[in-house]
Length: 276
Image (cartoon, rainbow, N blue to C red; front, side, top):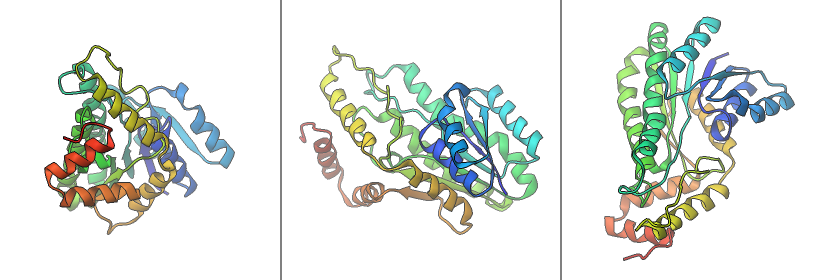
């Protein structure tokens, strides 16, 4: 039985991943900023007769991270698996996205995992084992898109962090996995773009927002990603980078063989923008 700490469990991948680990009998600490948003998780766990421990954790707050990790360590004596799942996806152009929104993306998607990793690594190193899972995105493997720079850049950075961390902790018996989903039906883009009708980029931003919302809403079942996370944790010979979904694999392969101009034309067409 593993002790598993997961961030961002009020919905989406985090909720599904908490249930997936609980199904195999692990001791699951499902964290979120506001426990009042944990109703769906607790209801699903009750229906299946699963044991899940909800816990308050704000990945952007040092004290909150220390308190949550300390509570789990005190109760269990260890953390075997860390799943960095919490994320936000504010959209907006380089010129137009508010600094506060851009910083929230990086504080949540990049520095949040850094805080958690630093908190759990001493214990993992002492025991000589552990698995750290960073939930990134196929966006972290692809060229940036209009109005998507902050999210894409944070996920590229998380992928690079995963590569560096994997080599740093390998001598201590610790593994790192970077999960890279394509489009799945989560709430990640809900409220992610507050459109300014006076913006010179207003038409572009509307097209990009529509593209992402449509594809996320019609995306795959988050349980596929959750099951992939559990399988990756269980596979000591698995790779660091794990794309999830046929769309993710296809996009990565296409970007690898296309020229910049070719990729730009395909992307702009997909977004409903002038392909020139």
